[in-house]
Length: 276
Image (cartoon, rainbow, N blue to C red):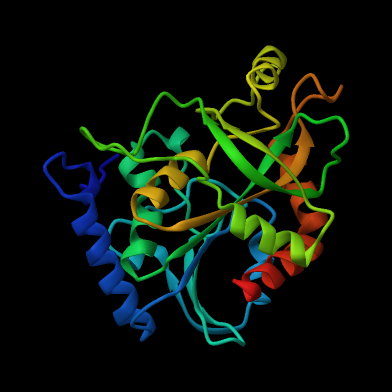
């Protein structure tokens, strides 16, 4: 099977230059010169895009330099430019490249770097994930307070030292809790995937301080911080993690929980974005 070369796969290429080209593509194709907020929609969060405001343009992500076709059912492949009631331009990313796809970290974080290049100063990262806390239930949204990167990888290249203190902005979490005071929070552990975590791995995550397990977000958050963005992270607990729940895990279960929770969490997310 033949594959056309991807610009980010060239080691000599500058990923920030490619992100700038992608941002120029988005400006040309949407007619929106700058975006203020970027929003990556993970499993279960997709309906939020319809509630944030007026859609100015919807693009197939593959029209934009450096974007790959999504590998996973339940993940869209579009970029949408939305105008909120308060006049903010929101770039909604429905085209996430996961680390487990094996394309390398540059492609995983390209959407975040592109968002920064469009002018966005706020990055909202959402995902569907497994919950470790016994008090949580499938279908519950939680805020990400911090992360543990268990992928063994970083989007930073060379001697690039970036401070990750308060990576998931306290200020933005406070905004979210003003919208819904019942929102709990926890530490997100990004595993490589694509296999679900073993019960022993879940217990390891718990012992080292994790509350949420998943396969995205941490690498994107690091890249967003490098780009100078303020980050809000939210997980939809689609299932209790392996060993916490008695039944086997399945992708169908994740999709089902996301579908059931979608109207409620999408309305919540749209309201939070409206306050940013």
